[in-house]
Length: 258
Image (cartoon, rainbow, N blue to C red):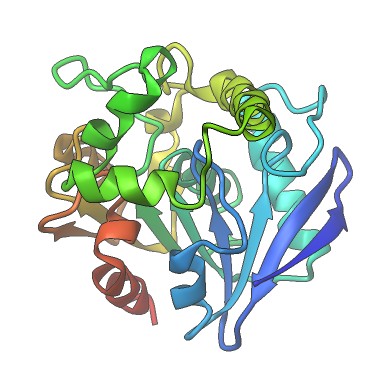
């Protein structure tokens, strides 16, 4: 994946691009994304992947003009239009799934193929979502992965927390990312999306890890009930980071969109 700068009306952002095949717009979750991400590499074997990095994530500058769910949605529409993408496959994970669903609901004629992976955006009182903003870093693997030990290894690969410079940069970046994500996820990720899902016309595949402890399976089932022409794919031995733990299964699910 190649990293390049892309100018959008509300912010200058960085964009990861690579691969060949049908155009696919990938929207990352609150953990961010970089060029070494193995899931993007796998996607690029079948698709021409465009993965914009949200303002405040990675090297992208923060934007004071992007404050609400509508701002995030319209910003991503601006990116899609600026790239000249016409009805790309839109794939979003977690927070990115929330943005992708909003895009498909607000402009239903612009998106006809949609994949939501462990998507945020709904709230079920009987299945409260854990507060990731109050979660200690060492607790995250248990929350995000079916196999916490392997998940912890994946999360810390290449990290040297004994290096003061690395640790300082990591903490600053993490604070920037959580601050941006908090605009739409804190205290709960309910911004009225449930009232708009009926507007989605896109053929939709929902991908959920059966062991997801962050946004549990009842949320996938709720999306499935609310979006017409949607299919829920339940992936065994996978948690919230299903695309990391079971990459081939997620790629296969996306391929169902044609």
